Length: 362
Image (cartoon, rainbow, N blue to C red; front, top):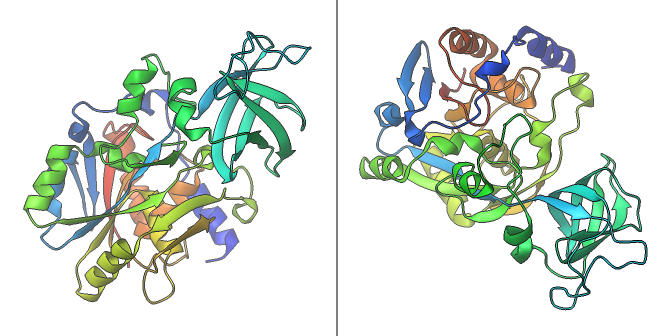
């Protein structure tokens, strides 16, 4: 499909979303969220009913990336270069008291001890920042305005102490960071690296996962570290939208599980759009290849989706890349009907909202 067609699809899929329909908290228990099953018809169920729509031999593929405490309040050093009492971690710095505050959102480690980050307000190259007792120097600027921060050592082990979970900007984070560290994390999250949760997985509980295993539904995992670009709407022509690079990993065991399922005619169910993007990034035209790397894949209507047969996903915002992805997967007509039904039936949208089970369109 041409870029013009993708722009037209995005326009036809546009809708008015009242602020009250953007979820501010997840369902408790997690699997009591609503589930819209979108096949030839539409059914309204609860997420805990998912086993009724799966069958033995199906393969669920999850994104097991874990959200890191990447939002940090930093300080500029004092004029004389001292930030406090001269005491630091491993002799690396001071306690960070002194200059004005800078909000830091770490994005990812670009190379050893050098992280891309959004700074508010932005700083020039050569400026120093103190993140708690940890010194960083601004050593560069990326094309999207992100700064490159150089730490003298591995900052990852210290993030739990100095950072907060980077909740989406539309969520009113009234609860403590400790509460969100459990709530805004999938129950199977393992590998730290995301700055936003792969939210389709937030509906699963350990009990539901075990029930699916007991009925013969198989499970495997990929890793895609979700970047801040997940919040970036399409603000111009689709052809000019730039996807942020995100790091992914497909292990040999996962590639074999997916390829074997496809070869044997068993269904592959992607849990979340990040899982779809990972599987399609690893697709070589015949099968899924193990490996790792960066992906900027942008799936729009007209882009074939080769690997998954079903998709579990949340309800996305108008004008988003994810809305185009689900339209590419299920078909524009099905998505238009599903979103109309969601608006009419009280579904909650976005990261902490309700879910859909989508069948791939023909």
